[in-house]
Length: 354
Image (tube, rainbow, N blue to C red):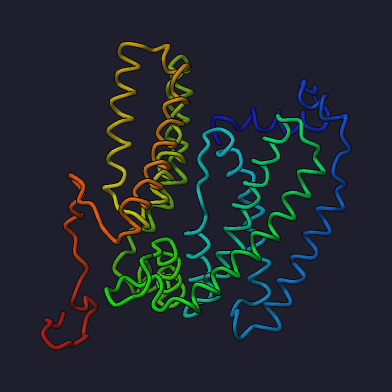
């Protein structure tokens, strides 16, 4: 953001009165989307959400001001996150920030914390995805109104189908998403368990009991300051050594946000792409610098396609038979879960009292 601030401001101004590129001129042949379509959709969704928060407050647990605050957070972060996505193809999330903020404001309400996270984080993520699809449609010369209708209808259908399938699975399969040998389900649902665990950690227990005055990890809050100062650390040497173009390529949101998907997996899952990426980059910059522009995106697409292909192949050949593979180097992180309570003053048979 510090390195591209002027560019962002210039692009914002040119979007209203600047020169039009060839893509924009070609898209002028189609009717543009009326602004009132967006305003009406915003008014309807906010009104329905307010009704849920007010009428079903015992179930939702989120007050009406919490809904408006979540919308304000989504609106504030949409622009910077969209810039990072457009520049790096990486979309950092604000899920931890929303959970932390609501956990401080309303501790002991796990459902309210989940709802605030959904309205604050998911609204922003869906807005970035919406813009991403519109950008693709802009380059593919798809009529804007058709894009809007497809997005709107697709969202309604996807939400309805997902809710129906989830309701059917949860009522037809016993102990679904439970890592238990007596469970009838072959799925462990790591992402859903992380979502549930987050509601307990940030909503029920609350950040104050973990990262606040009642917890043991208060020093972790200094990382918020580190994240704010980080771009300045890159900006200063870039200004001091403007001829060193590689400095401005250091993107801390990408480096720090790459670990955002680690909770459903483990740190071991990242070793493979770290090794491959390091070896490839060293070889390219050492011997074939011109390969970077030619084959970097091809390699990235090939690795993504390989992961998707192997996921389907392993599920069909191993997962459906309830078998497992022991991969080399994937023997866990040697960090077993605690079997005894670690909090002070809690007595359990067979466990020492802290």
